[in-house]
Length: 164
Image (cartoon, rainbow, N blue to C red):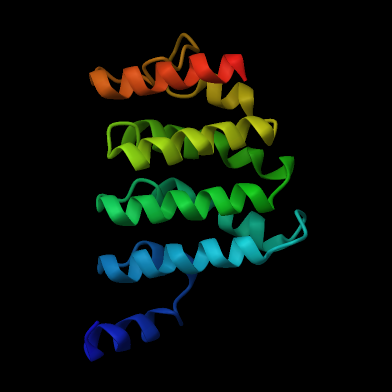
């Protein structure tokens, strides 16, 4: 990494989370997601107030147009979900909608992480939000998309979750 990149990342760490996660430079966004995941992994109290602060950030973070950054955002989301309790399920619908819109047609690792996030929302008692997410009939088999991969991936997930 160049000295210029290091300086940019160091300066960006002073910004609020939302600005870091939406920064124009993908390296800043990537670094912010890595830091957010590490911070969430360090939280031991599921009632920690920071979790309520972080919840609204994930809708945009998982929608990132840069695939590697999007994967890091999903990593941060998974860390957030593992740290939290059912109180954060209020963020499930908007985050699930974003995941359906942006993550189910991506790289296989992205799809796998998206599916893991769906399962954690179910564990956090947000299953009804997931099941109703993105489709007027409540069937998430297509998440409201005509793209074949998104429909197939979400349908496979729902079928496997039903066996869970």
